[in-house]
Image (tube, rainbow, N blue to C red; front, side, top):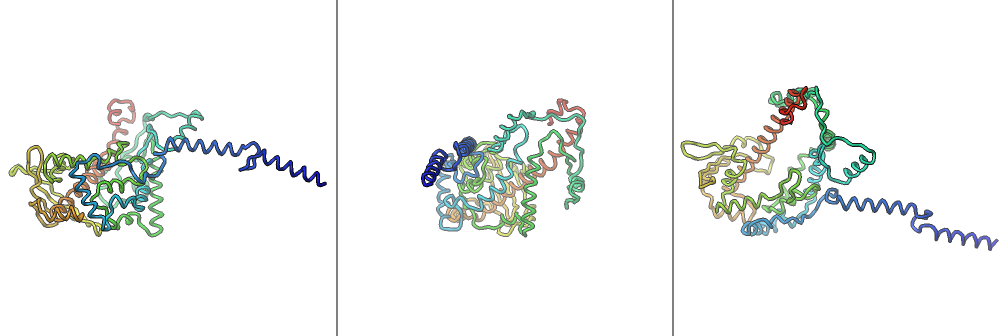
Amino acid sequence: TDKEEQETLLSKELAKKRNCNCCRAKGCAVCCGFALIVFTLSVLVHLNWQAMCIGPLFHADDVDALRLRWAVDAEALRRAAASATPLLTERALPNAFGWMTNVATGSVYFEDMNFVQGFDRPGCWSLVEELFSRLLGRSEPKWKPPVAGESMGIQSYQTYAKEQFGREFPGEFMQKFYTGGRVPSWEDNEGHAWGIWKLHSMVSTSRAAGIDPITLTYPMEPRVAFDHRALAKMASDGFRYFGPMEIQYANNGFYGASVVERLLQSCRRSDLLGMLMTDSVFGAHLVYEKGTGRFHVDLSGMSAYQPIPGYAALGGKASFERDGSSLRTVMLEYQGKSYRNFTDPEVDRAYEQNNTRLGWRMAEGALIASLLSMTNLVMHVKDLHMEIAAAFQAVTVDAFSNQPKHPLRRLLD
């Protein structure tokens, strides 16, 4: 009996040695499968790291590498002056709130809103989808052709809201803006619909918990100093599709600071507003006064908008004169005060040493913010996207619904 027990124990020990020590499976089948999965995932991660990862937290791109020495030195002084205050500088980043905000508002929705049929979507999941599609023999045209006889139906935004959501917009102007009643069958709307669903779910869940998501952006502290590198990091940490200096998709890279500073150097003055009105789209807001030969911009009407507590009000006026090939600011007006002297040592000292805009610099900053709002929100978002683009597409599709190959339709599409 003892001999039989010893033989049984010996047989068990030999079996253990033949089996895998980590999983006890004969032939190491589980371990081999697990190793293959890990290896495959490692290859996918290596090939798609930049597209997959949430980040990068720190960017190797150096904004200052392209900038002029005087501009870098001046910003270094402002950065040093802010180090003993609650102001955020590059050294204080990444900031958890800023990082999470970029993840929630950028990375989560960017792919849904920006990649449509015909364009490769970045990331590991898209690579897997493409692989399985090829294995299964599925293929679709890069761009689907329009369907003959299919129309969108032109209707006002107000009518669309009533039919689709059973509600009305509060503004009467919505009855005067037009869009299509449906999405054409040949257009890719899946990503957009998915993105809107995610946005709706997030907002409704937040509000159900008693929190309106927009109020999370209201707190004023901590503020970011006048630090370009900090601003670039604050705006891009947590966004996973490209870095601040990459020219990719709709991103032109954070080169504006160096471009503006070189233009200022060529003008040999610190008149930022005059330079912007000369060399940027802001010039679209200028009005020429023939009697005096001056140019004016008047956005004082924007002062009627109540600012969020802690933020400066919009609005302001400015006048400019020709100075060679550019415009020079000769008058600023903001909140009832006029400024004609732009070499005030106290104002310059507050800007350089305390990261504070006073006097004419405050008026200039408020007017630039107003010009940004008017140009981007009104001219771009309202005029172009909301008022023109939707109606333009609906009219084009309906007018040529029976002639999808008409050359004029192809041009307008």
